[in-house]
Length: 139
Image (cartoon, rainbow, N blue to C red; front, top):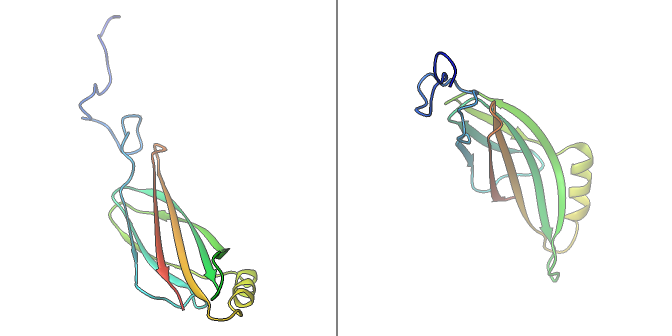
């Protein structure tokens, strides 16, 4: 040991600031998604994080026609949102023009059943990552 001993915050977390090297916990994410939603007018969801972070969202939909076993999956939209600590943010994910065209074409089959999946990857300033996926029935 050199003069002055070992400096720093130690391991007790005192003096640690959010986004510092001592931050090893991933941000905790809450994702709210209502029951059944209209896909062509957009999916509305709420995001809340316990610390400031960046959320990357992606919206995909799986469409299965009657009489088929396999679903066709379409990627409709991706977005990036900055979240403040402890604040709830409302986000609306609309399908792009190309996505809407693909969606209408895929849903033209006999008796389609659709499920939308929202995937969220949240990263804080220290690089800690949390992931969450939720599905919702769409009409």
